[in-house]
Structure formats: C-alpha cells, structure tokens
Amino acid sequence: MALSSQAQRNSRIPRLLRASIDAFRQPDLRSKLLFTFAMLVVFRFLAHVPMPNVNQTLLKQAFASNSLLNFLNFFSGGGLRRLSVAAMGVYPYITAQIVVQLVTPIFPRLKALTQEGEQGQQKLQQYTAWMTVPMAAIQGYAQLQILQRLGGISGVGLTGSEALPTVAMISSMVGVTMFLVWLGQLIDERGIGNGVSVIIFAGIIANLPSVLSAVFNGSGFGGAVLLVGVSLALVVAIVIFNEAQRRVPVQYARSLFRGGRMYRQSGSSYVPLRVNSAGMIPLLFAFTIMTLPQFAAQYFLGSPTAWVRDVAHAMDFAFNVRGVIYQASVFTLTVAFTFFYTMVIYQQQNLAENLQKQGGFIPGIRPGRPTNEYILRVLTRITWAGALFLGLVAVVPFLATRWVANVPALTISSTGFLIVVGVVIDTMKQLEAQLLMRTYEGFIR
Image 1 (cartoon, rainbow, N blue to C red):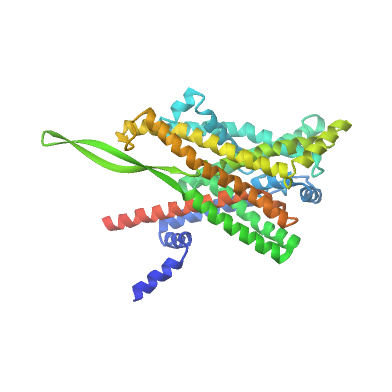
Image 2 (image 1 turned 90 degrees about the vertical axis):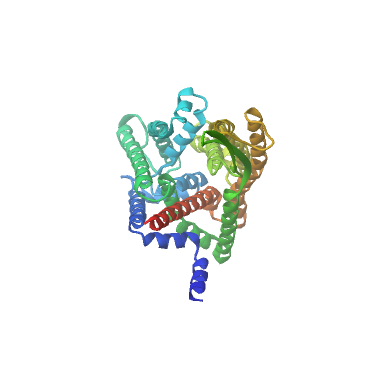
C-alpha cells in the first residue's frame, strides 16, 4: 500500500518537474542544471545594460505607439525596449542558420559537408558564425534607424560626427550577440538543452510579467482570464501537433554467416514522419517578411515628399498587425513556408537512399525512386495538417487581440508559444534520457 500510494503521488507530479527533482539528486546533472541557470543569469544581466546617451522616456513613448517595435522587442527578449547591448539577442544567428540550411542543397560543397558527419557539421556551424556577423551589423543599424525615425533615439548615422557613436553602438550589439551565441555553445557542452533555444526561451519567459501587466491594466481581470485560456489551449494544441507523427513501416533484411552458412534475417521498424516537421521556422519567415512593408513605411513616414508620405501612411495602415490584410497574409505565408521548408528538410535527409543503403524497404513498395515518391506523397498529405495548424496558431493571437484591447504583445505570442513548448519538451527528453542512462549504469554496477 505504501509503495502504491507513493507511485500515485509521483504520477501526479508533472514529468518535467519530476525529472528536474530527480536530476538534482544526481551530482553531475545538478551541476549541469546550475551551469545552465548561471548562463541565463548572465544573459538577463546583459539584457539590462543600456546603451549610453539613450533617453529612456522617449524610447518608452516610441514603443507605446508602435507595434513593429513591440514585434522586434519580442525577438530580442525585451532588450530592445531599453536599447540594451543585447538588443538583438541571438536572432541574427538564427537567421544565419536558416540561410545556410536553405542554400546547402544549392552548393555542392555545402551539401558534401552534410555527409561528412560531425566534422562537416562543425564546418557548417563555423560558416554560420561567420555569416552572423554581417547579418547582426545590418540588423542592428536597421533597428537604430527605425528607433530614430520614431523619435526614440537621435544621432544615428554613418557620416560626420554621428559615425563614431553609431559604429560603437553597432559594434557593441554585434559583439554581445556573438557572446550570447558562445554562451549557447557552452550550454550545449556543459549544460542541459539546446543552448541557443534555451536563451531565446529565457527572453520570452522574462517578458511574461510585462505581458500580464499590460493585459490586466488594459482589460482587467476578464482580459487576463481570456489570455490564460487562449494560452492553455495553444499549449495543448502545440504539444499534440509537435509530437504527432505518421509511422511508415520498414522491413530490414540482414545476412548472417554462421557455421559456414549464410542465413537471412528480417527485422521490422518504422520511419517517423512528423506532422510538423518545420517547427517554428515558417512563422519566423512569415513574420519577418511581413515586417518589411512596415519597416519601409516607418522609414518613409517623415519623407519631405508628399506622395511618398501618403504611400507610407497607406502601407502602414494596410499592414497594421490588427488589420485583416496583415493577418490573412501571415496565414498564407505560414502555410506556404511550411510546405517549402518541409520539402527542403526532406531533400536533405535522403530517406529513400539511406533506406536502400541499409537494406530497408517499405512493404509493397520497390526500393529507390518508388520509395521516394511514396514517402513524399505521405509527407505532403500530413504536412497539410501541420501547415494549417501553424497558420491557425499564427492567427489566433491576432483574434485574441481583437477581444482584448491594448495588448500588442499578444500579436506575436504564437512564435513564443512554439519556442517555449518546444524547448520545454526537448529539455524534458534530455533530462529523462540522462536519468535513464544513469539508471542503467547503476544496474551494470
């Protein structure tokens, strides 16, 4: 009875919490968790170190009336709102990763690196780090220009007396971005979880108090209840679709040599095709592209030419995050990019070719090209579910914003939900795998 009641109490504890408690009982895992937490403390400290000569009052007024700035602030983990040295977070590195992944099938040299194992992956990571530097510099200068156009800061430019302070600010932002990427790599080596994803996760979680405060101040208790309800529904849906997969059965024929004779053995397995293979990448693509019209509009709102100002005002109104055009465009782009990115990943995996090399085949399907066509057909069908799901996830926060006034942060929370849920699931799996490995080590002893 005592064991039964103890098992019932343990079953009520959430898996992540239970895994964390068990991990703290292991000295080596405890050190990994504490190291990860220490790196996140360093990241949050940098996010609160502001640039010099920045008027925080003007900066706050600029953010209060502009949804584009709130969007960019979300991706920085809150660092852009106070224009800290960590105003860009690690997102230039994420952008570089996406670019490298997309161009890999185009360049034979990069494609060859993907087949060279760990050494090839390290080389690709090196190329990604090199590409991050110019991307971070361009993104940093663009953000400073937007803030200057909206009256948040002044003295930004690459000519005259403005050049040296501007270069110093951009250099600081780029340097801290690369430092955060290095922290992420340290977490990969000595901590728990995917380092860069964990840093993004920490930035999103740090923004939750301000989001809840904005909801409560803008719409009261009812708005806060609605936010919690929508959030819980999104979390449940994301977990279901992230873990959903279609298992394609595979048979393996093996040859064994025993007693001077050759025997044929067969084994069965499956190829897991995920419903949402693209993860959060389509949302990042869609939101990034949809910021371009807003960025252009914000840049030309102060133009001395009348017709340019009129066009900029029209674009700013048409592509407002609360507008139907913006929301419909985000949904369409998310669905399209889901298919595009899923096909890119599938082409890089070479599933049919690898199955044939390993002696595997799908029952009733010939190896080679027919297997490739069959897998592609199945993947296309299940991707429709994943694409429509991501499109709805992207739009649901916009709909909630229509019901809850004065909460611009809700318009960008869909990507945040995907990141948070994905990081939590990945960290939980890593903790459980580490604990299981140590349990088996105990059995061996």
